[in-house]
Image (cartoon, rainbow, N blue to C red; front, side, top):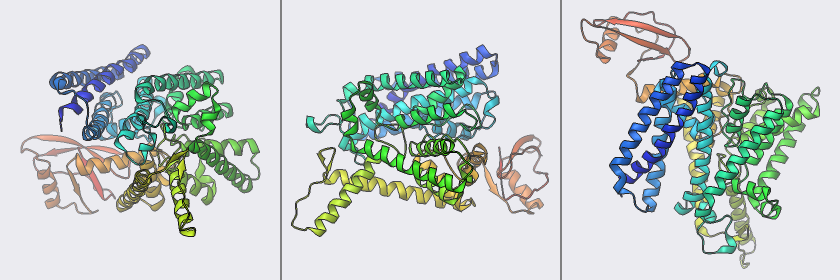
Length: 527
């Protein structure tokens, strides 16, 4: 395996991102936010330098990729891009720790939509634009990987959508060489259409751009702390419509534009997606009208369709506090988080086509048991399902839900309550951003996700020591000081972070002693 190929590809892509960092820098310069603009310039300089270094060093290694090299290249590119795209947050005028910055960049590029940043209403517009750009570029990258690379790797049943199949009648899309340009055009036109509709409805130009760049890639990074809660009804309906269309296979939007409805209606996953959204939304509407008799039908319909589509497509926008909908309403939202929309969209989750294949294979199994001498061939969109596709789907779903359970157990082991642990794990695995409890719509998600980031930082990136309340003896203070390598005769200052508080305290450490008042907390982090 040629390890230089992933680094060369990473260098090319990082160069594009490095140049793109100058766009929000220019916006901040125009707004007079010089410090924020300089942060983007520093990040762009570091990114471009490293990218050119990768390109110059590994240029001669570029050749046709093998399957193993595709695996490695895809993983290395995603990780390297996230590492460097975190730099603008790290160097900004409202700096984050690198762990928090990495979380924000990863959430943006993967279109998860969870954030560790609070006070978005007062943030420089360059930061808000950069978050939107990460969503928009990351969403397109996800589609390209899903449609052009994963079918070749035969992952999770994706070989069903292979673009180079010799069976012309069974193809669901053009060849790979014809996909990229069409996808980019449709993606761009869909974004422009969303911007225009929001602008016509009365939204400001910048917010229309930010919301559109978060809606079309089903990301959920809103330019305000309130997400979509304070938007007028017309704008919420517009976002609902574009969230739904963004959950469709992107190349099907081209068919809709061409008014080729037959290709859209003939796809089983599209019919499943539309029927599922309609049934769940109407059920939730009936529940809301029964639980809150004073609500009018339009408001209940709007809230139900908005939140159901936001959850299914993994967009993560919030139109109102769904934690007030009762246990049934909250359970519905929790169960929708890992579902996912259609294959070929930017949504996360399992995806509708895998549920279709699981249903068809289960039905085929039951038929074969009831009629053992019968001959049944399960088909998906008139394509016979072979054992590789079915086993790929089963393995994918097994790993998916096993990862969800393990993640929930890990969060519960941190002392997080059950509802928060389950919803946060489902949100992360399903790539949604919605949650309940401490990561719910009104619980300050940025603060809660920042606490999760601090846990990772304590375990991996910082010197950490755990103390129980009251262990403030001389031995413990001496051991803590030695652990941080304090040189005698020097004074160093460290910032104290409390896991369950937003407070920060700067303490001085002269010689080999640390003196500060012990509060009622179990875990501390010193930097």
